[in-house]
Length: 350
Ligand SMILES: O=P(O)(O)O[C@@H]1C[C@H](O)[C@@H](CO)O1
Ligand SMILES: Nc1nc2[nH]cnc2c(=O)[nH]1
Image 1 (cartoon, protein in one colour):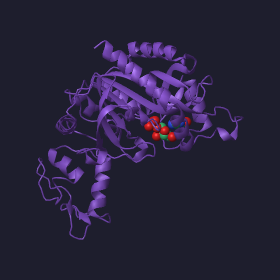
Image 2 (tube, helix red, strand yellow):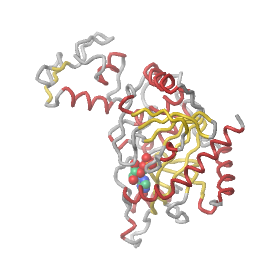
Image 3 (cartoon, helix red, strand yellow):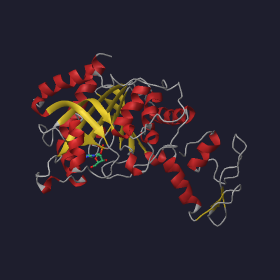
Image 4 (cartoon, protein in one colour):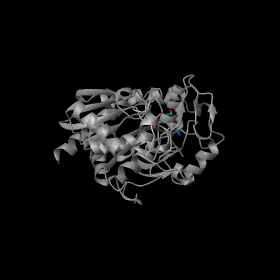
């Protein structure tokens, strides 16, 4: 694991304050040094590496998997001061659902590259911007672009922005995603309100909460049985009725796999046997992180493709990111309306 244990490590990992690599860490050890040729060498065991110093820093930055409370606080302060807004609701836009952030009024936009210590988005359909403003009179912040495990980011890094949201003042997390429909009753374009999940990455021993626990965020052993807020699910169902889309809205179980491959038929059969209705590559670690710090969670999947669960299913049932993006684009108006109306409900009762 490439976590860091001191502030010196934070600086090193980000190549910011420690660019020369010449500082001594809190534990007295010298961090990796960068030679003038661009190669780096450990002063203690003289390990040589063919990466240039910039490449080494980039890899380090990507693998950085622990963010101390103080670093998260600095990022949150940067956003709150820069926007002049303390958001109450945080929205994570799924693949192709970036328009959820476009409906925010009086937006203050932060490119991820310009936010200190923030990762960058590498996936098509994830713009890589944080948008802060108002929606239906509520202060909100939206991630137009999330981070996935398959991009090479550790889970703690994928969901680090959720902790930033928390320290910005966010009480409600709205997490959205594009997902494959496994439940045979689901059609492409349907919306599944998440009421539970199966954490496949957790089964494999991976968690965003792995490593030392900071009790300022939450407890060592958080319970997850009530992760998806029932009031918000019920409100969303009511809203779907007023929108006339209730027949295409379901309540179901989501599972996140590591990706970037879509699933084999045997895997999809196994997931179905486990009670999974929709499968994707995100959200679960964000929800775990949000529940750990006691945020209320609402999450939904837009079903962008139907998963083949029988070998006799047609060959053109193969998933593709182009299809995912196209379906999300088609359904973005409906998703935006659902989100706005739910935000309005929360704001009404505030
Ligand atoms: O960010 P989400 O979970 O919405 O994106 C899904 C999972 C992969 O990133 C991508 C595959 O098409 O869509
Ligand atoms: N894992 C996974 N992620 C998706 N995202 C959109 N569709 C799918 C899918 O079929 N499988």
